[in-house]
Amino acid sequence: MSDVIIGKPSVYIGEYVGGGLSPEQLADMAMERILHVSAETHPVIRAQAYAFRNDIHKVLLGLFKKSAHSERRRISSVLERSGHIHASEIAMQDDT
Image 1: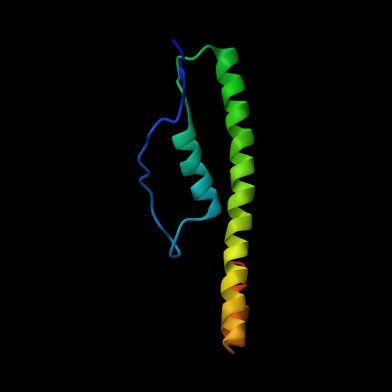
Image 2: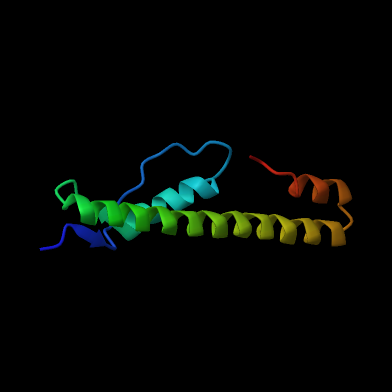
């Protein structure tokens, strides 16, 4: 019987500050749904599972950050084409 569960459903309970979830929060939520490691898992397997989990988290975090930047760039472009130059510049400000 395996103590490493892939695709474990979970519920996120957290506080949304600043109008939405950060890329870090999204990556954490994704990892909770993708991979759960039981406390009773053999230590060697647990270490490997956590190493794998950390690697996947880094990949997701990088992609979520790129996605957020891409969406800001798209919004900025639409605003700029509509003549809202100042709003376009605000849209591109890093909100972290």
